[in-house]
Image (cartoon, rainbow, N blue to C red):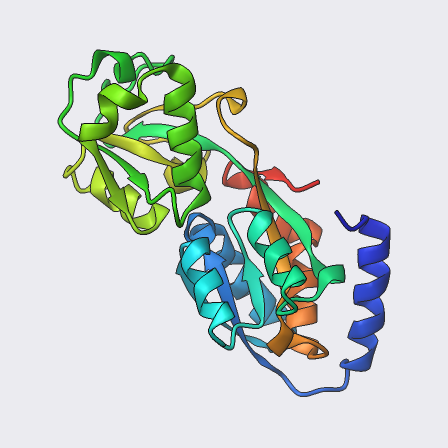
Length: 252
């Protein structure tokens, strides 16, 4: 992991090069779980800088494939730290720019009150037809859900009931629409003004690998003022306040 002091010095130096440049249009690939906070951050960034953010929201695995195939994204806000590291290794991202912008939390959630208990015992009872999660091959939150179920010893019994969405946003839709009584989603998706609507169990962090979400500058954005400014803005106190308000911990 690149130390914060080195990253800040590197970024500040590059920003000086582009201060006089005209406003940029910045294509950003954003992990689906980070949709709501990023929309707020992007709006504030646009107002402050004049740059335009063009955000696409989806699964980190799908974005990885698109970037490898030449998609012109300039920044990736991933749902893990492994994908940005792979892109750096493969030469399609700038290594010194990678840092953790947030640490995510997994939650078992139902749109209906009283369904999910405070200890997640509903998983052992199995009194439901479907349980939703994001595709574990594409989405880190889906992989975390599978890992948690296996550690709890319920995966084999629940496997026939699992319905997968391509993204965590689709898994959330399955539950919010009632097509699935419950499912594993990101805490940020269900936290509204500090409260969770419906019923939920925040999955203990020792049941799954830490969901460290990293940002990285991609090759098409190298040397451009807009992407560099956005990465800097993402680390600002106002942006970090938005991030923590959605239940994330700040990246380390």
